[in-house]
Length: 183
Image 1 (cartoon, rainbow, N blue to C red):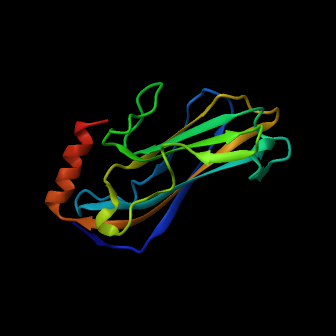
Image 2 (spheres, one colour):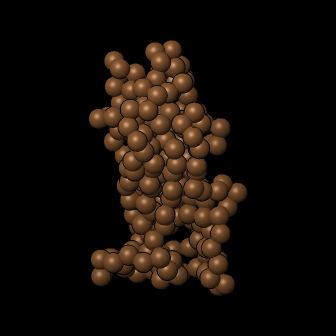
């Protein structure tokens, strides 16, 4: 289906959660990697989602989430190749969903765990990669259950391992039809 033009590389963006129960969005531009005329696409091989505590007063990051939250929390995150519907997250069956994950933190016992939606999402070899022909990856994350501590935010970093590939014309058109047919 695809022939690699480049080796693997990483694209990243960080979205800072500043309030509970508020969807926070970001994006990763892909326009310079996609070429309609040459049937170039991005093959997403892996998506990592990393959550850190951000101290706004000291402009510093750490991995101790207990310093940022005032109780039990869940952080849900998604990556899509189309914009998200207003006010919500995508259902798992959405064709535009590239990767997703849920992370839970039990404050009283200082235990973290992944939810039923496990990340990182690893797609495997090139033939199993998630092909993207749209000009952006959309990022969305949501903090639920407990409030943030004063002067703290959660920094959610999306790391996308990908490569530029050349598709056959028919494969590229199939992706274009699929992309325009579903959210």
